[in-house]
Structures are given as structure tokens and as C-alpha cells.
Image (cartoon, rainbow, N blue to C red; front, side, top):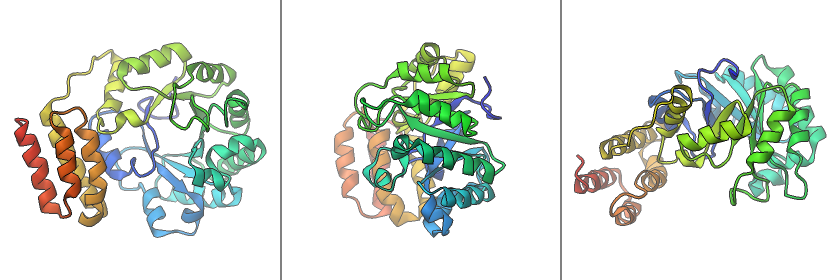
Length: 321
């Protein structure tokens, strides 16, 4: 099933502080996949907070970007949906699955799975406020004693959502344990709109396994893409063409890490980019020889020339320049 007018059915999941413009640009450079923004707080966007406004602004990206909004106030959702459309969103996703205490404490994210009346009102409001297609991302339920994903999915469909994404964990699970693919399959069976499955997809083979097991229309990949930005296109090619992924070379890792770091600099400036680059260094170099020592060295660096020199030194020691 074609999902809206995307040319893929593999999504890069929205991750706060990660799926920013530099990350989306890197992931999309490897091939097809659907880019999703970091979650955008509607209370900040509606008052045009400079940082939040910039996160939502995707007008200069040459691929479709789904902008994800998070909040609990339907009036602010209306304003933010209109702004997101003005700022170039391809479509809008409503976050009703974030488990973080700060988000839940504001009666948003996965809290809305406990308040289906307000959740429905929000969806209906956003659908009416914009010409864009609207989707909803949610979880299995609040906890294992209140699993309501099937009922919630039906409510999303009735409220006007064009498609939905279900993460096979409860809010109380956060990201621990095994994702429940059975609940994803049940959700798929319960609605007519497209369903995207999320949880424990770490390879092209696991993506195919989820598609076959649950019958979902698309796959969303989150943490497995960290330091592994080629994974989205690898999954797309495997699912659509049966193409087995080629082994990623050391040169590809090196060049991609350098490119990612420079994209961070271009977007955030050197000072902020240096701090942000530390987590990417950890992710890209996971399982490489002597990576622990390299990470320790990099974490101590406080200026940009030394940071670039340390990256070059490390990969040169591995035989890649």
C-alpha cells in the first residue's frame, strides 16, 4: 500500500536532539526513506520561539519532511499546524507516544492515551486546521494493565488521521524489553488506514520479518539508525527490490562521520556542534578497534581543530585516511 505520496515506506523515527536537519540530510543522502523531524513543542512554536521555529522550518530541504508536533492543547495545535504548513511540512504527525516525564507531565505525548477524548479533539482540530495529511504516533498503551492500542487506533481513524504509527511498547516500558509485534498486528487488522510498525527493527531482515508478521504498510526505525544512517535506505532496497545490503566499509564510516560533523557545524556553529558531535562519534565508532580510547580522547577535546585532528588520527590508525 502506498502511504500518502511518499516514494518509500521506511521512516526515520522522530528522535529529540537527533533527527535534526543534519541527520536527515545524511540519511537521505544514502537513498530512499521518509524523513521525520524532531518533535516540535506546540507551546513554543505557537509563540514563534526562535529555536523551536527553526526546528520546524524544513522549507530548504529537498526531500519531504514529516513534522511532528507534541502538546496537549488543541487550540495551540491549531496554530502550530498552520505554522508547520507554512514552514514546509510535507505532512504533520501528532506525538501521542513520548514516554518522557516532562512531556507526560504536560498532559501530552503518551499521556493522551489515557485521555482519548482530548486526543480525538486534537486530531480533529489539526485535520481541520491544515490541508496537509495528519498522522498519529502512539504506543501499545500506558502500561500493561491498560493496553488500549486497538481502541486508540480506531479513534485516530474516526478522528481523521490519514495513517498511524504504533510502537509496540507501553509508556511504562519506555524502550526496555521486547516490542510486542502482536499488538501491532492487531492494530493493523482493526483499521483501514495505513499502519506503520515501530519497535525492534535493527536490520533489513528484521524489517521484512515485521512486515510479514504484522502485515503493516510501513516500518519506522529509531535507535538502530544511530551511527548507522545508511540503514534506512538499506531496508528500503531490501524490502522493495530484495537487494542484500553491502558491508559498510571503514572509508564510508569515516567519510560519513566527517560529513555529519561538518553538517552540525554548518547548522549549529562550531561551539554547539562540538558538544553535539561527541554522541555521534560514539555511535559511528561503536564496535571499531580501540574505539573506547578514541571516544575518551574525543570527549576531552574542547576546540574544533583538535577534534578534527583526533578523528583523522583515529581513522588513520585503522588504515583509513
